[in-house]
Image (cartoon, rainbow, N blue to C red; front, side, top):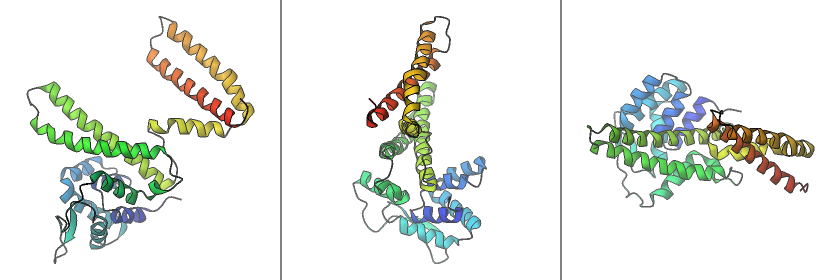
Length: 266
């Protein structure tokens, strides 16, 4: 069962109120991408306050309560949200020095935001994705800072620099979407290629041995033979698409053979 938006907002706040995660959460009930971009352009300091206000209006949880949750959840961060006597929020450095083991700290925060990462039944693909997500975030910050040093008269250099930043941001968002979907639904979204083998395996494992034997001994070989003929035909124009199908067929055949071996059929 899906948890309600109030519970999701509270979980987000208790996990430290990650700004990017908050934008994605806000997008689940407010589809105005232009407004979301405006919030993002405000930066973390002002943008987070806007998000908290919007979440408070949506969930009826007081702003001060959400800010207090975020403050408690950000104790491991380099910057935390605090409130002054008038109830206005501002961001200050923590009283303790930040740890130099930044990778460990980031992983710890991710596990706090996505508790399933620490469970034994967590799909192993998420370990790969988390590592890629942390790397993508570091690349995004590093490449973004380099944009200011680019030669504005060199269009190719500017394009490559901006492309690098955008690619890192997109990768980070795609992985966060996978993590958040599993957190909410308990099922794999599966948009990322890392889950391709698992999805294929789950589909075939649900089939009978007879069905698998028919597919691996007849259906897939026939398809592969057809694809080979197309690739050898000079008139074939979409050979890249054919190669993708050929690879998919080979992957499926490999998975089925492993399942049949496990069942003692081969």
